[in-house]
Length: 500
Image (cartoon, rainbow, N blue to C red; front, top):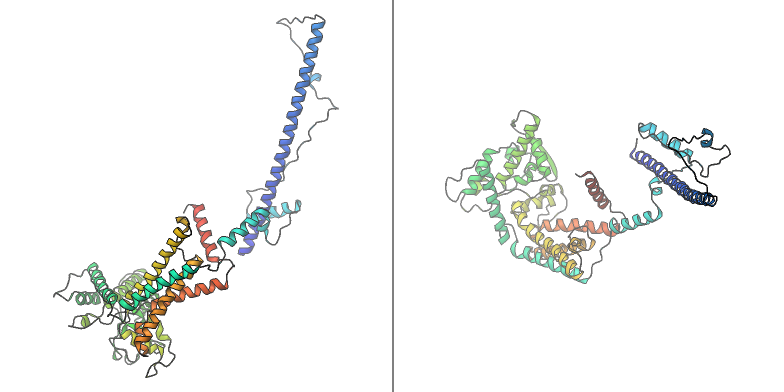
């Protein structure tokens, strides 16, 4: 049975139940009318009997008749006196019995009874049976609610909304230009590097690291501990280690070329796959390359345990690499070292098109060179701060304007991205941030594509892109049904009804 057929059967049953309810109400009204008529007749009879008794009493009094009833006297009634006269017609006609359906029947039998009942009472099922379940006023109210609450609306921002959003984006852009800059150079970049070092040391302590042997070697010691604690089979670092299968691979770029080093679902998938199959997967000039590795034995006695062990190896090895290698960080003035790429950054290597720069290199080659210059997860953490500032400032200012300018209740000032005006303000704010970021990168790069990308905030552009897609969709589908809002409402109603 298809979902539509199932819903139609349910609607038909509800229509029949509605008809039965209407018939029952009509029956009850008739019963109440009959009872009211009987009560009225009873009152009339009582008044007539009182009048007759009064007349009889008056006649007795006028004739001075005295009735004496001894205690032993017995009044005997003939049964014929109590019998109903044959020519007596009831004043109220008897009520007919209601037509019922056996609700204890199984599904198919019950549906057959529904169809039979509909045929007996001339009930016609429309193409949309649910529409017939509502009255005209209910249908109008439902259509109005759908239009007000569940339709996609275009934004109706005023000049103050655009001014506020632009100012928030300007603040985020200035933070990006002044405090982020190129990897590892700005104040926020250095702060992100320090926080990453602390995170690596903290994770190592959770796994039994006792501290460095020499002062000043904390990060290098923690990285070395994690490398031994969580070994993996796809940690090839040079072209020679892959027998020439992956070209131009070195210590600076092997983390971005190896898909298992990507801190996202893609990296997790390939890491588990490589650990189970004793393989290693790399990306080189837009191509996926797979090579065989030495036998790698995962811990665990069953598949679930081995998958968990593979996950922990992947996670632990990412922590060992996110702040650079132990050998590189252990040297004096070694710099930041080569970290791990930002989530999904490795996929940019599949875009092997174009010819950029003096050497006319493809975009995938440029992406690898940018990573080699420090555009890694640590720099991504620094770039996320101006994006977060723009986001939070815009939402906060929208709440303040709604509460104190439009005089809305606090419950109506929740900064949900589903609000069309807030959605437009976020687009303007992040667009301003991207405009400032791109302008700064273009002016300072001097036409060098690698320098341009190093100063570009990829996260800001990703956020602006998602907002732009939503805004284009909202403008194109303005007035149509918002399926996501309807689904959210139905899920909330289901949880409320079930108490979950």
